Amino acid sequence: MDFRKSLDERVAEFATTQFVSLSPEDTIVKAANLMKSKGTTEALVIAGGSPVGIVTERDILYKVVALGLAPGSTKVSEVMTAPVETVDGASKVGDAIAKMTKLGVRRLGVTRDGKVFGLVTQKNLVSGGPDVHVPLPELAQPGVLSCPYCGATMKDRKELSKHIDQVHLGLGLLEGDLSKW
View 1 (cartoon, rainbow, N blue to C red):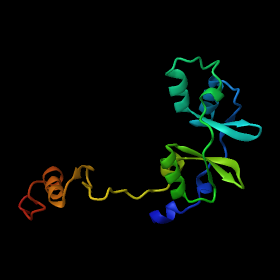
View 2: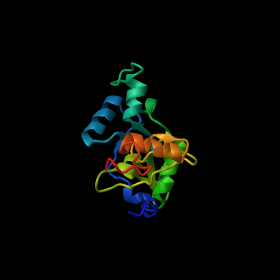
View 3: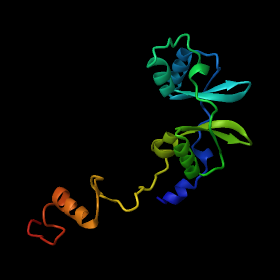
View 4: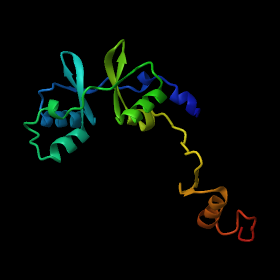
């Protein structure tokens, strides 16, 4: 598959329009129950017809459960992340991944004509299942050699060759000793 082509596809192709939406006044219990029933890990918080935040299962875990707050009385607005970061649906998948990485988020609202119409997640983009995914090329660090078998890093080609020889193939094979083969 052509990785460049995959990263150049439009974000809108990977967005879901079937997302959970909540009011800022809804409780964490309601949010968790809706997310569970829809099989999702996030919900958009909508006020006045526009998204004002997003609440995720991590928000519930770290900002409610870990702090000992009462989920039945804690409002979504108290733990949501705001504002909702967005990407235009016509943007490239590679640009959306870069934006998520730069902002440290896993989800973006997807816009068309300035209005959010869907959500895209890292999971949708990278490993959204057999039907929807974008294979990413391996990213190598400049000046670092990695073993193709186990990922161990080596300082130079000689060290990498020795490692592969001893750990993965058998002593001497890469040096031309075919007596074992």
